[in-house]
Length: 276
Image (cartoon, rainbow, N blue to C red; front, top):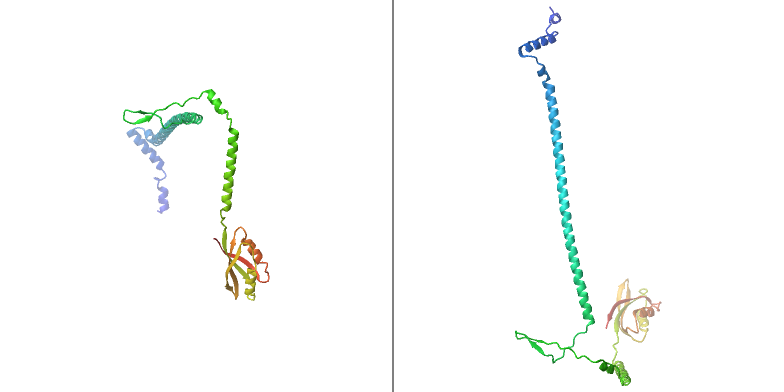
């Protein structure tokens, strides 16, 4: 007998559903029907689903209550802040009103002080002694003039002569002051200037150049010492000093006059300028 023939005659694998059914019936007769056991799986899933729904509802209810409580807390904090701001605003209004009142009082006092003249106290004012030994000068009222006396004071019979004498005295004093001012020596402002006079090239006659510079003469101009300073490539510049009166001679005038000697002078620069 081959293996294939053996398998064809074997019935256990092909009749397994029938054996399972017989086994189920046997256990049902022994323990009762097994329907609840078969439904245990779906019931468990349904219970899990119900439990999950309950947990979701509880979580939603908790989040809602927490959000409501947080919103309530926020509203309470906002209300407290608004109340504090209102109190602060009221206090600031009160301070401003007090300042305005004090300022108005101060303005009234200043106006009264400006209108009333300062009282004149005489040297012979009697003093009232205090209990502690100190004394305070007693205020005395100034004598009140009658209206007739004031009218008499307004009438000046010799006013014209006094005005003429005052004018003459004033003119005499002005004349004396003018004479003293004219006799007083005036201070002449002077300056010391050091000029750099540059030639065209090394073939320029520097002696002739200096002669041309010193030929510039003006009221308030005094030439001083001079020297030749090497510049480079055999070229030397003339450095010459002079003293000038500021009101009469300026650096612009000196540069303009010296640069007129175009055959010898290329340019003129102010090397130093000092007030004397």
